[in-house]
Every structure is written in structure tokens, then in C-alpha cells.
Picture 1 (cartoon, helix red, strand yellow):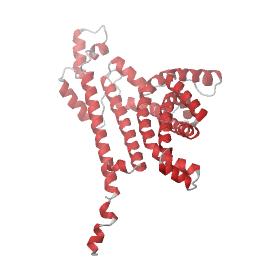
Picture 2 (cartoon, helix red, strand yellow):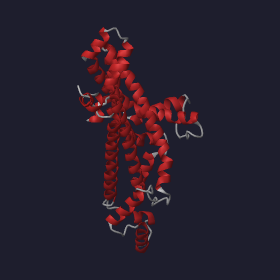
Picture 3 (cartoon, helix red, strand yellow):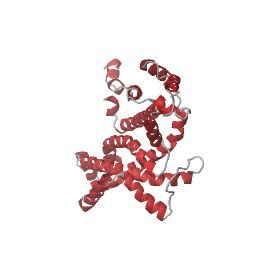
Picture 4 (cartoon, one colour):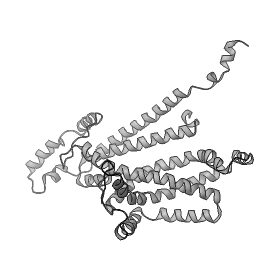
Length: 334
């Protein structure tokens, strides 16, 4: 057979190189994420422009004269056309300048940067806790079945139904106020005191993760049950492979994509849930900043928080897509 024919039937010709596939996969996901950031930021800008409120009047005060309000409106640029203000804001935003807060006169990037570590600490800790506990509960429920499965399912239903702020209040009362094991309020930066940082985020993270654990554990259980019923799992067991190897190396890996997808959705929900938890534990995070900015009508700060939050969601989804592509190569080609 000619060498050309041999080359034509070789593995290199029938299967595309993995590097271009991975690069195209990542570029596609990154491009979709950037479009999402642009669309949401644009929609938020124009929605804040049609609320009907007058930030200039609120900033100037109720006792300000009409001339003072007009002057403040001109200072804020509110007397310019909406499209002009949008293009000006967008041109600065793409360079990393999110403007200045109308009420505190501080850069939005600085205000968001002060609050971001607090919220990120809570959400990331809650996400890690959710992933770890959900995997254990889901696998145990799927493998053991019987009364163990029923008990875990009942606990999951109760955990999902109880509001996270109520869980936070109970934890703060019992473990912080009564026993003094953790601080009840406040946040300690990681760089200054790692042990104090861990203690300050433990109770809020647990309260934030309870509902997410119930959701992801149920999904993991269902996925594991489906995988364990597959023929290849029976084949692996019949060949005498250790149970741990079958569960962790094969069954859990094939059940992981669905659970990871649910976990990424829970990350978005955790960002929203952090707003209430931060109030319960007296933390000044993104949620507290967003609530204050929205109530005051501080449009630049609202826009900055929205952009940063969406970027976080895009980054997390991109990481999840990378992990899914590693677990299942078909995802990279789909």
C-alpha cells in the first residue's frame, strides 16, 4: 500500500489535533462571555436611565433650589442625551474606569475592590463546601440506598426549604453568641490574619451553602444512580475492580458533568443569597454595596457592581466549561 494511503488512514488524519480544538473551545466560550457582559451592562445602563428618579435632587438635598439642582444635574452629565452618556461610560469602562460614585465621590473601582474580597470569600467558601459535601452525600445516597437514602433526601428537603438567613441567625446565636466559637459579626482580611479570616467567614459560608448543598446533592445522587445502572459499570465490577475505583474513577467522573453544571448555577444563586447573609453578619460586601447604591440611585456604582458580578459569573462558567471539557472531550467538539 502506498505511503500516502497509509498516512491518510492514520490517527492524525481521522482525528483533529486536540490543541486547536481546545483553543477554539475556549475562544468560543470567552467570546460568548464577553457578549454577555456587554449585553447586560448595556441593558442595565439604559434601565437605570428610565427609572424616573432624579439623582441630582437627592444629592443636592430637599432644601436645594431649582438652580442648584440644575447645576448638579449638569455636573453629573444628566443633561446630556442618554446615548452620549452611554458611549462615554462604555469608552471608559473598557479601559477599566467605571466612573465615580455620585454620593461618595470615590472611584467605583475602589469601592467595588473594597467589597469584593468579602463577597468572594463567602461565595467561594460556600461553593467549595457545597461541592465537597454534595459529592459525599450524593454518592452515599446513591450507593447505599434504603433508609440512608430516605434520611438524606429528607434532610435535603428540609435544608432547601429553610431560608438561609434563618440558618445564619441560628448559627450566630448558638455558635457565636452562646458558645463564642466564632465571631458574630465583622470580616477579617485574609492577608492580615488568615485564622481570623477563616473564623469570620465560617458561619456565613455555612448558612449560605445549606440550600445549595441540598440542590447539588440531589442532582449528584440522581446522576450517580443513572451511571451505576450502566452496563460498563457492571462489567467493571464483574472484572473484580475495587469498589472505590469503580465509584471514583469511573462512575463519579461520568456523573460529574451534570453536577458541575448545577453547581455553576448555584454559584450565581449564592451571589444573590450573599446579599441577605451579609446583612445578618454585618459584612460590607458586594451585596451591601449594591443595596445601598440602588436605594440611593448611585448609577455609576450600580453599573460597576453589575459589570463585576457578571464578569465573575462568566469566569466561573468558563472554568466549569474547561473542567467539563476535560471530563468529557465530546464537549470540546460539540
